[in-house]
Image (cartoon, rainbow, N blue to C red; front, side, top):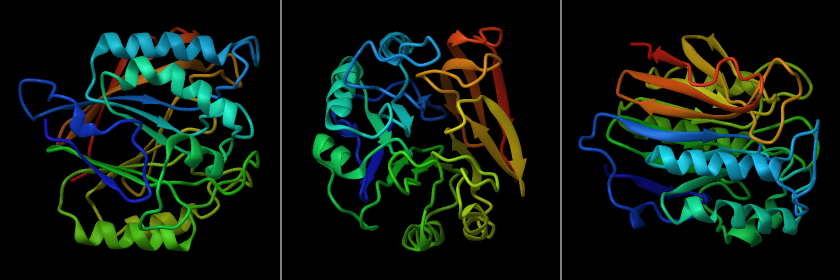
Length: 282
């Protein structure tokens, strides 16, 4: 599969072009979806009796075994405040994965943009001080946005420059199914994405935007708004509620659908291995 990564203030842990194509055709793109890894410099750091470092090791092994076309981590890479040691530990944990396939990293409210940029050698792109990533496949386009407002503060915010960039990008791109990723939840609470309504104002004219994937709440959930599917990715590090799984999602994108397979490693394991197929709006 041809895979294109646009460096618009983006970071892929490795270059997508460094890897051979996976799969016999171009009808499906498989991407491992992770969120909220919450890695600390101290590997024994725990929350709710979960060890995020051990969880990520287990998930990395599962992702390697499943052989997707890439892996995306949707924010809250760091345990709490985005310390340099957190990102050093994360790089080491991801190395077995990044040696085999592209790993794409986004930011959440427990990250620090400056420390992240130093650790992963990011460069400024189309939107100053924002980490934006565009992954193009024959069947799907994925845009990972940056909703980090302040480190270790709950709310998220895209901001006008990023929304304007997205509007121009959507207007200038082809009709391929387009999926947005953003860390923060898409409700109207004080700890959610504060400009969520303005985000929907941007995407409303573009029927090619089929879904938004997000994290932040450490839940696995499916909703819909204005015909756009909203998918809440579970956390790798720990859950906030015993009813929720801890783990990752194996996503298979086509032109018309996405099939999501839950890979739970902790918490509520009842849905482990179950799949859900979402059909895009016309």
